[in-house]
Length: 267
Image 1 (cartoon, helix red, strand yellow):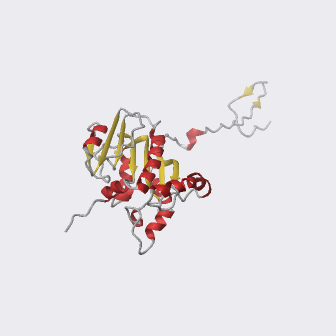
Image 2 (cartoon, one colour):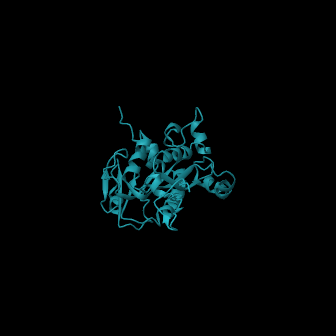
Image 3 (cartoon, one colour):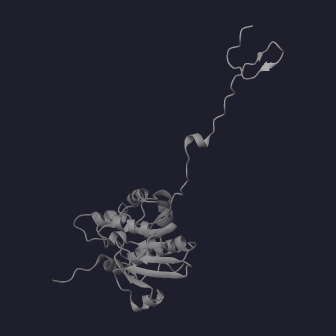
């Protein structure tokens, strides 16, 4: 029996096709814009080892972590900073990574929500994660779900995580969405010629059907609420002391009895 090909390998092969190149060009531009001004020290790309999507970032340390070994050419680009590990169990200390990018990592993971928990664990406070994925509600997603037709995308619709669902997961963790974009509005065409002819839909689709792009990219920041010591309520707003009423009685000798309080003595 032939060995089953891992999903990430199928995805890398799909990116060599005309629609794959079309989607990859859009994703490269979006990743470049999303990571260019992210500062820190450690940046890691999870998955797709042969595609360096951290090229626009200026951190001193940029590496790859995933289940597939990069090709010799790609290893040179990563400067031998390669770690083989599952996305669900990143071999990094908690709060030690400044930037993580995950191109289609959720679609290739058996438990994508566990991947996101790992992302939240390893990111430093104010660290950033950038994620890309296929939109199951686009024309490409609809083409993939059509019965009796050859699958269009490398992953089935059941493995695709929609952007609204991903944002719901963010709310359960300390991750705040910074920005999100959809792209690739051309119909499902296998020919590069026809994909170029439908290129005018990029601007029209972004304006009139913003949620219908075949691919999305979202950037989120890890927020950690600061601690504030709150004292007892009686300390926060001191009460004004009430002035005690003192009745001073005049004595027969014309002096005052200051120790006398309350009801005056009878004359």
